[in-house]
Image (cartoon, rainbow, N blue to C red; front, side):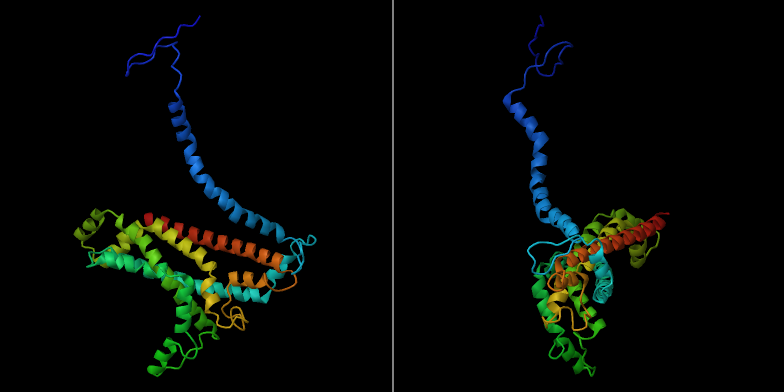
Length: 328
């Protein structure tokens, strides 16, 4: 027969061979709460993400290997890689790819540079810097459609404010909607206007985490403010810069709203000669035209995913290599 000893006073240890007292209902509930409540908090997100994110991705990958007439009730037979071959061989897809790359280079590269410079200025003892920090985020709060409509009016071919200013100084007007490079510049300006402030605040948070002793030591060694920026500030925020560059790359390759609303003629999506049609616009247009719109649009989507992952990985490797050289 086993003898059960009563628990001793608080702070004493149970002697070996004794049986601990049974847990009360409140103690059991507390253990269950500690163990399962974190899981319950994240389950709604993963459930919604699986329903509206994972399932469409998996189904689009499945659909890309079949034929589906435009007004057919269901998809047709298995066609293998025919939809991928059609998209890769489509000249319009080639134009959309280079348009996307061109707009990306004109937007993401200046965007990161300007955001870094503004963040460095806001990190100084600037008068009213709280107001300035709030103001740089205002363009990001404005609805993308409103921003695109405003810039569409600014870059109108006939009566746009930009062309009126060019005429006022004796320069010829620019065909913003028909010239390829001009349309890229106009769309990139919208992207820069919206996202520069967002990236500025991310970089500013990284700047504020830099120990001020580093700047004091650099000043004692005779480093000027510009030298401190290149030799102290930039090396200290490399991880944040890597994050900003990768997210800007992904966002730049998925641009849709700005070029879509920049198009004043809804008959030609992305221009009469597709001079500013992007990859995501190509998917949108493909899904609404052609003989097999849905499978070809799904195939184009997965080709874009591969392109974005490849560019982001290349960007990551280059940035990491530069970071490694800077740490030596």
